Length: 91
Image (cartoon, rainbow, N blue to C red; front, side, top):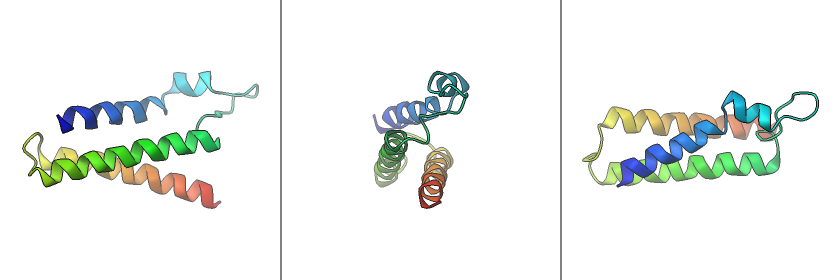
């Protein structure tokens, strides 16, 4: 149950960064808007928070639904994205 939700949310986050999505959200100069807008940053942060919550739930369950390396890798990527968002907001 948790693993399916985790993978679904990870896919949703990945879709925010696809080339086609970037082009669809680009302004007239080709600059992606979605990632740099306050709403875009909120959506990315929200998705990463959900991913971290799901990874924590899986860890508390004893990794029965998935191997530890996969959960650690997914949570690590979510943390990396959050750090990048934090750096961009601070700049």
